[in-house]
Image 1 (cartoon, rainbow, N blue to C red):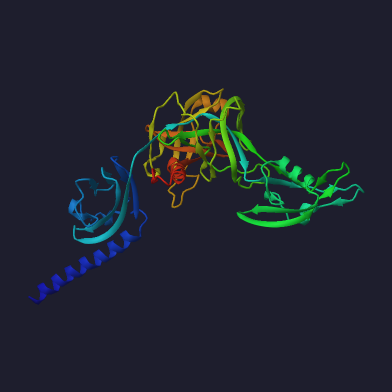
Image 2 (image 1 turned 180 degrees about the vertical axis):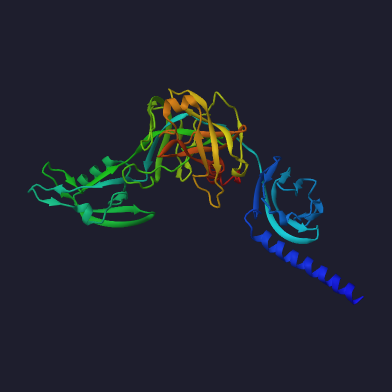
Length: 436
């Protein structure tokens, strides 16, 4: 009897040690996520890459509880590896996995989101972005009527990249506003309100009368950033759009352009300078019917520009298609939509070479390679102006082109559409239409 008791005690101790080992390691290993997002009605597969010694997880439904109750008529979970989850019920759920259907070893939060459909882009667009003020692109000297050189802006602490918002309490919109206000006021002590790195400060300087009789303060400024990019998607339900896939920075200073006013218009590609190793290529385009604005620019974010279109966008190649979460993207074949001649949207083959798992959203979510022979012949790969070109895989919008590898222009980065959709969610926060 004593021997049997010792054997039983030994077995129980072994089970306890096994439980403690598996429980602690399941909780800490990255191959078992703490949170999973899925789209309503669409199966989501997770390759847990569980080592062989952890294959002791129960294969029965009894090994899972959902919010402490039975919701398995609405949520289906296959506990085999790879793990698959499907839900026909929106909401957030707490999943608990149990060893042998008894011992809890892992908790996971499941967020079930609605499917969103958009019109994919590919359209070439002209972008005009006016900052909230004027951007200082250079500091200059001023020579007065006696030939003496002054540096009023430099001495006042103004730097290239600063944004001048107010002069003498008056809002600045254009470069002409700066000249007009400085030469209008009798008092030539000028007070500037300046923004730098998100912080605002005031400074004073003395305007200097030059040898032509005009007053100057020694600044070179720009009041608009303009260029050609690509539309990523248009949401017919709300009228909002997303484009470019990355933030707009000033070309001279590298500083982010804070939106004051902005607009998008049609653009036509008239020429493409092909990319070569260490030599970036470029789409060259012209604005079409510049007076006919097709949309505004409300925000300039890390994931592109976003705003409202004044008329629906139409894509001749696609109607509405679903947007998928980043976790649904996979390595393999895909297509991009872009314009390389005039305003004609075309579809070109690419390969997604790597999906980059992201703890925090970024514009470098996947590595792509242009494989389409005709596109390679025309552009040499990814060129300036192609940013925002939508990436479509398995009939879903999964992202957009953002960057090119300088040493290999056939390859570059793409941003997940999920992060761009989140920017639309912020614009529509009062209605809470989107949740990812």
